[in-house]
Image 1: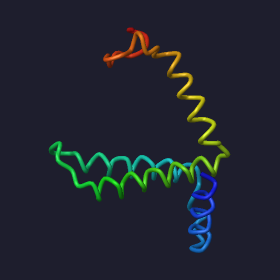
Image 2: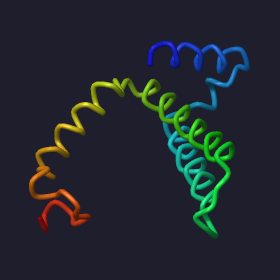
Image 3: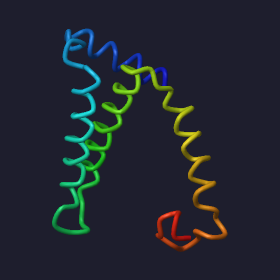
Length: 104
């Protein structure tokens, strides 16, 4: 993760784009790119793997940049959230079900 953050910072700084990479703008960009990802699946279950990969990468880059901008340790927070979800969705109750945790 640190290597990706360093590469993204360098890319941004070489273009003098830090001024545009506010948390608000980065959050908007995450949403915009997620919409473009969804567009890959808009009309059917068929999809272009390359296009999906491009959009997933865009979403991931913006997520990493947003987390970096506001000081969130993504690895730590992802592990915390997985642990929280494991408590909310015990495997023995959630297996094979798509119900929200309060309906298990």
